[in-house]
Each structure stands twice: as structure tokens, then as C-alpha cells.
Image 1 (cartoon, rainbow, N blue to C red):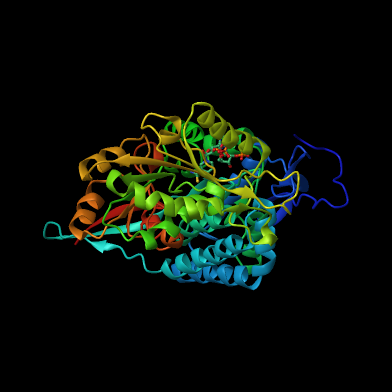
Image 2 (cartoon, helix red, strand yellow; image 1 turned 90 degrees about the vertical axis):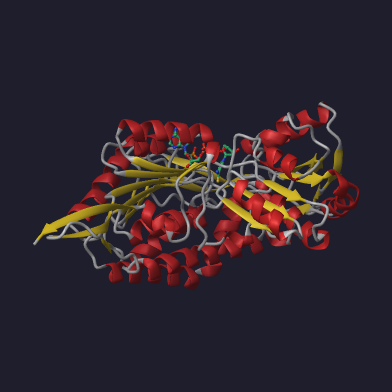
Length: 490
Ligand code: TAP
């Protein structure tokens, strides 16, 4: 829904598009309403950026890259600016927490963890900027050969609504550390912290054009950015459907891309596991961010011989879960939008209609606002292997429990979806853990743990339909740079 009227008095007005360190209204003059998911009502507006705004942002980034105002700053100076931005995020911590909590409906504790991680991304990549060394390559006598890492140029970034602040740090941090000039298109449903971080970047001293943000609709601003001939690389996190469009546009422009497209990640529990340690982590892995996490542990794979002991423990914990608004310390918040809530509720209703057994169901707190987009968490099981709930990403607080017989069966089941993002293995048999870690077709494996708090330092990304390329950790610095071989005859 596009607005061209002034917002109501209690609605935060749109700041605009952030281009060349300045707020500029969208060329169309239009804005988009943003809802607070826990309240179910509009509380802010953002600029409805479009093709012409993206053109301006690409021109600004191109200038910062070509003139060298950003790309030729020393790596140490780039690192200092990134670190300073991390410090400014910490200095404005409570403001950013409140904004992220309201914009996404996250419980305050989750929003705090997110903003802490956001600052950490900038600190990490600030420290890493001048640690990427080239190499000297042995070659024929009479030649001196080096391999040097250089920026890709202008990089585009399209991020989703589930972790707006963190995703900004995760994708811009390494791109900027390597000297790329950036344009970010955040999700229309949640992007207020992203816009505030852009403002803080200007305060930190980033030169004009290094960081540009164009909010707007996906099929307008997002499509314009991903198809733009003026970008040299694109990073996308979101649905496989849009990821496919991004990859097609990148191929047409002969540029590279990194895609992170979600998953249906397994938590595999053997009968020799420490159930006391496993159960709280198993439940947290699906309830975190109301299940709206690409790496949510959405499939609980239980060895048949462990089912009768493990499941009652999970059920007990699951049934106590309460969804509510950020300030009421709920176990989980609402779903991001009415549209997404319909999608998640649709999965639950179809599974119930198909007769899938409900093992446990949480509830919504009594004090939760009427209009909030809440969905009580549900544990289904045993779920047949070919059911939608065993294969498709729900992106909500729905845990599907399935049984397996032995290690070979566990592996086949775990690897048996189109996705391959992360996996958890719970066992006391170290040799088995190593065998599975090597054969699971995913980007990250956790043994007797799951997710480990996000891990800014840990390279992250998928295989198969979960995408390709890696963000997070040092690996991302290679993703956002190119190797140049220099051959000197002497
Ligand atoms: P997407 O549509 O994929 O949105 C992700 C980002 O892409 C948003 O910034 C979106 O902008 C933008 N976008 C949408 N259409 C585009 C286009 N044609 N060209 C370029 N950019 C475009 O995801 P969604 O609709 O928010 O969620 C749908 C499903 O995707 C979820 O249920 C979930 O299964 C999956 N999902 C996965 C993840 C992760 S972390 N892997 C994150 C979110 C969603 P707008 O928001 O303005 O449309």
C-alpha cells in the first residue's frame, strides 16, 4: 500500500533514501506504511524507493569507488571507521533495541542480543580489514608473482525482515572492509534500525557514497538493484523464489552473487545423547525469533529407541511456551506481518486437517494486544517423511518430530530435503559425531549444541536450495573481494 498523504501524528515519518550521507525523499514522493507486529497497527512510514532512487544510489557508490574516496582509503582507516560504527551502535544501544523490538516484534532480550551482534559485526570486520594479506606465488626464475585481494567495486545487498540490524552488519561489514562501495535494499516490513545505522555511519565518518540505503518494495527497489548494470556483485538473503530471480539477473550482468535462502534444518538426537542438555536447546532452536530464522532447527529427528524418553521432556517444555509483546518477556514474539501469519497458520491448519498428531501447543499471553500477529507454537509428531511439514520451510514456530532407526537412516533423513543450511547432532559417541559431521550436506554442523548464538566469527551459508557462498567470519572477506595475480619479470 503506497501513501502520498502526510502520516498521522503518532506515526514516525519517513526519513527517505540514504544516498551520499543525506536523506533524500523517494523520487516518486511516495511512502510505505510499516506495522508493529505485536500491535498490528502502523507506527512508521518509510520512503517507497524505486528504480530512479536506485540509479542515484548506484551513481553515488560508483563515485565513492572510482574516485577512491572510499576504495583507496588505507585498509587500516577503513577498519577504524567500521570499528567506530560498532562503537556508535553500542553508544545508541537502547534506542536501537527499542526500535528493533517494535519494528520486528522481538522480545526485548532477543532485540538486545541482535543489536549486540550487530555492533560485533562491525567490530570484527573493522579489526579484520587490514589483516587480509596477499601472497607470493613461486613461479619460474626471473619472475616475481603476487596474488592480491582487491575490492569487487560496487556491491548490492538485499536483506530480509527477520534480523534487519544483524543482517546489515553481516553483509555490509565484510564488503566495506574490503573497500567496496555499497547499496543496501532492506525489507519493507522491517528496516528502521537499518536506516538508523546508515545515519550512524555518516556520524562515524564514512565518506559519501560508501553506504547507501534504498528502502522500498522488493519488486521495485529490490528488482531495480539486482538488475542494475552498475553493480559488480550482489548478496541476497531471503526466499528461494526471489533468490532465483537474483541469480538470473546476476548471470545476465555477468556478476557474482552470494545467496542465503533458508532451510529445513535437522536436530538429530541419538539414544545415547544427554537429553537434559539437549531439550532446552532443541526448543530454543525453533522458538528463537518465533521460528523466523533461516537456520531454525525445524526438524527434530529422534532415534526410535529414544522417542519415549525424549519426547515427553520436549512436550513439557513446549507446552509452557508463551507468545507475547516485546516488553512482557515472552518466550517468543509475533510473526512479522499479517501475510506471514496467514502463511504459518495455513501450514498448521493443513497439518491438523490431515490428521498429523499434535504433541504440544503453546499459547498467547493474556496481556498480548488483540491485533498482534501472534501464532502459538506447535509441536507435531510423529510426522511422516513426505508430509509438507517434514520438507518445506514454514518460517514460524512449528517443530516437526520424525523418527529414524540408526545412523545411516538418520543421515538419509537429514540429507533428504532440498535444503542444506545447518544441522545439529546430539550424541555421546564422538566417532559417530565426526562421521555425521563429514557426511551431512550442510554449511554448518553443531555437535551437542545448536546455533551457538549466531557466531559472527563462524562462516555461514548453505548448499543445495539453501544457496551458495559464505557470509560471516573471515571467509566473507574473500567472498567480497577478487584475487588478482601480478606477474613481474625481473
Ligand atoms: P523475500 O520476498 O525473499 O524477501 C527478501 C528480500 O527480497 C526483501 O528485501 C524483499 O523486499 C526483497 N525482494 C522481494 N522481491 C524481490 C525482487 N523481485 N527482486 C529483488 N528483491 C526482492 O521473502 P519474504 O516474502 O519476506 O518471505 C517469504 C518466505 O521467504 C518466508 O516465509 C521464508 O520462508 C523465506 N525467508 C527466508 C529468509 C532467510 S533468512 N533465508 C528470510 C526471510 C524470508 P520486500 O520485503 O520489500 O518485498
